[in-house]
Amino acid sequence: MDASENRQALPGEKIQKCIEALQNNELDNCHLLLKDLCDKLDKQFSFDPTTKKLHEDLVTAICNKLTLSNDVEGNPLALRCLMLKALRIFSRDKAIAMRLSNKSVINMLFEQVGYHTRVEEAINTPEDNESPISQQLDYTDDSNEQIEAIVESQKCLCNLIYQNTSARAAVQDINGLQGICNHLRLHHKFTYDMKLYDLRLLFLLSALPPQQRTTLLEKCDGLKLIIDQVLRCIQEDIDKRKNNVSNHDQQQEQSNQCSSHQYPLSDECMLLVSESLRILFNITLELQNQTCNEEDLEHIAILIKAIRKYIINIKTDMAAVSTFQKDIVNLLVNMPSKPLSELLILPLNNQEGNNEQDITETAAYCNQNMIIILGLMRFLESRLPDIEMLSQQSIDSLKPILTLLCSLCRTNRYIRKYLKLKLLPPRKDFTKRPEEGKSVKSRLITLLTSPWDVKNLVEDFLFVLCKENADRFIKHTGYGNAAGMLLSRGLLAGDRTSEAANFSSDDTDSDTEEYKEQHDKIDPVTGAIKADNTNIFEGMTEEEIEKEAEQLFTLFKKLNDHGIIRPVDRSGQPINLPDPSIFKKPENEESDHSDS
Image (cartoon, rainbow, N blue to C red; front, side):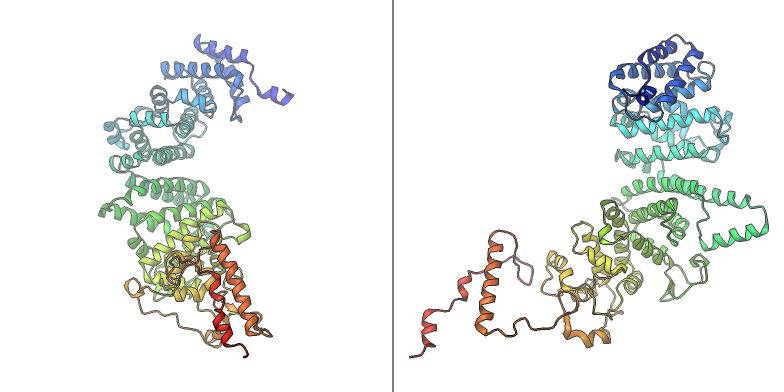
């Protein structure tokens, strides 16, 4: 072991002394030993297996001490903070976390935070009936040792719930969801860290055990609770920033920023709202399996109106904003599409649609304000890298926005027509293939022939923009790029769909003058004018041409026999290729043409 490792390791003798100090109630000595331990192990996420037994004994001794003396007199706050910090550090280890994941320890940690888990306490928790603990604490003082103890307990719970199912089951047994939801109602008195870890706990519980979503939605009124949390957090942050303005010029500048939506929210607020939106994403997964009632739709409408403006300006260079917008899009995917589409289109005279200046022609379409739809399109563009830069992470970030836009296009004809105009305008330049270039359209078409599974979403999105018309789809993408989608839908023979059933007929995709002039020169496979129009058969006799065709057919037959390719007919059904001998002329036919 080198010098640095020796400095990090805590000798077994010290751990044993710490255990004995806890058991003998030697508080001063225990404080010094625990501080030394926490300082040395704070950045470690794995521990020496040779001292595993001592670590487990220490964790057990700390839990016993906290459980038996859960008051300030029995455990001074400074010592209690150190004990909880040690539990948080050791809860990173799966084996030790398993020992901590029992009902007794979970209940003890809940008490340290101040979670009230009984239903009657949860119902009577609002400000008029706060718990004695909450009345005694100054939740706005970040240096308060009690706050530190609460946050350490929350972090420890997060580790345990994330690590194993036993902790999640213990939380369910003690009605833990109710306690956390009860705590959320007091967030106006909490520090930032306390709010953050409350929300992260709720996210973990709503994500990992699916049955907890139903409990949160139905028994804890989770949808309204979290939406209220989002609205309160945004309003508190806006009010706080306004109160911090000291002179008229700064106030006027901030007012202009608020009207143009230059993200008047602080990074802390955006992080809290993002955590809340992730919880709502988990909750609304359950709403997809049932019909939303009017009350749920009203709450959802209020939420969308509050957060829709923050999707207008895409700022990928700001990590907090980028994450915030991603969580907004993810949540919108779960929203009922018809009411959502109506909430995302604003009237032209609505000041909320202004983006740095008055409404421009770009945002106005069919007497409606499409600024939020334009923001979603820009969000798609920001998540769409060049094909060479594609990774699993970038592909995963594309899926929600493609799903959302496709759903909106199917639901609202104005959204579809607007996105069609922006993303698939009538083609005028046929010298380049559709997939060539850096435009959003080109990068989307490139994905049609990529090995990534996101190509199915891209196919669906572009096909819907083309009103699910195969001929129109081919015109914009080229037959080569479209072949995979056409084959999967049995449309290789051309359009066999009835667009009138699902789409309006008042918009057309008429051919441009450039298309009419160049139509005969365009290669239908590539979707571009052939670079070289030279006849490849020039200078060959008919017999040579027939021989080339026979050799080509023979090669295709071999590929088919080895299962490398699968020929299909025009309807997309598999067929068997005939034997190449069909190209050979019968002998009697040859003799009829011979000289006599």
